[in-house]
Image (cartoon, rainbow, N blue to C red; front, top):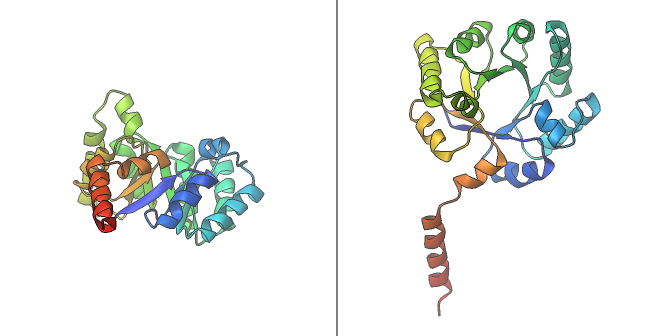
Length: 220
């Protein structure tokens, strides 16, 4: 599969800066990112978010459903999916309520991304329910004192062994070298904060070489 990068932000300036670059296929959001960007979790604001994403060439927009139990998560997920059926993918936490809502959304043909994954066994749940993606939190797994790279490698091996179409959409990335290590074991989908996207281009040697090229081109 081709490398798939998504921008992890709901902030309009970040979208404007990065989506036209061609580096990102789409965007992932959640209620916390929406709150930080000043976007309320209500249909009108999210419909406007969908229109803005379309205008900027976004191919997939992951919107997270909210609710205290499976029924409210399902209702919210249905409303989110209806905002733009060709664009929106519904995110749900990989817990009992989220799994129940996700099962019914998948049955209705809605692409589902399970999120907040910390254990390899959760990948099996998502695969069994027919989700499109599951988002393990690499940095937060490492914050628990665990080997996050080993845990995600185990998740990918599960999917490879099953021949599953489920994709790991790695979140909570903090270092560019983590992408390199994970790509090396066949993981191809990552969601990046704008600050990490900036760091992908931070190479002093490249900047020095480019400056020399420019100076030579302009030399008399």
